[in-house]
Length: 122
Image (cartoon, rainbow, N blue to C red):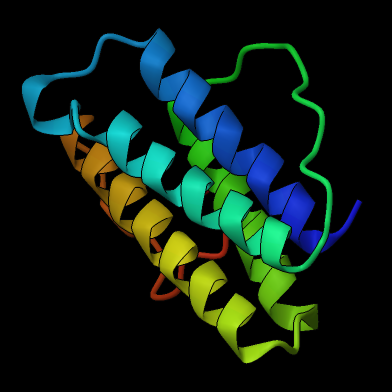
């Protein structure tokens, strides 16, 4: 599986986790925002002539799903060399980082325990 398909699978898990959980009003847009990131990744996969991943079952918490998606984006950035794809992945990673910070704040935790979010649990 390529870095892009790994990231797409992780981002789809974020959407599923966000939809499965009752979120407070200030976080209800997280699912739609993650859906937008999935659409951008799917478009990039199509542009690169890569098949999307098969969706795996299983439930995971929203915080874990976001951390995994950020870790997948971080790994992808280390190996990708196409400038357009890197921009898409960077936007996805930034959006996931923002969502993760908002989620942590809603849980009365530090929004970013590290200066650079890499997807590793605090």
